[in-house]
Length: 211
Image 1: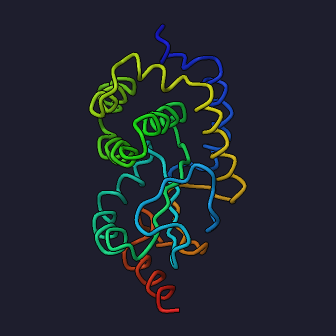
Image 2: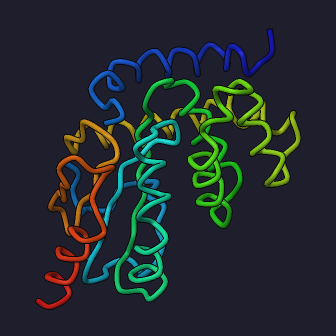
């Protein structure tokens, strides 16, 4: 059995503990306050408008939002620094795979974090086709990590402990599913959609910008 297969006793215990939350946070309110470990793009902290997304690298609805909405949202609001976009990690089944994916993104470094997250979301079909370990390892290799570095990354106790803290923060914020979107602390819901639509996000953002 490889180190990844067991993920170490601590990592396995973490995945088991998170499974309870995953049952509630199945792929399917957060607040505007800064949380430890936030990963952000766009405007600086303290921006007039902050958009928070809770998502998982194993959630197909999150992947659909990334494909269908993210490019236009990024161009209109993130690249222009009109909003501060904050991404928060919330693992969905298979929880241990999502956990490893997020740990991998952190190990890749802040400059490559979003590249890894978006790559994993955009290639979810490979998780089923070739197996989760091969899927994750290919992504690790693409950002310059070898197999040993990958194994060390996804079994690092300190990184797992920090990840646990981020999940507790999501729980405390009352988030119960992914993807979830908040504009200045107010949840944006598009019925029947793959997360919040560009139209609904724009309406909320523009209203905040106009204040």
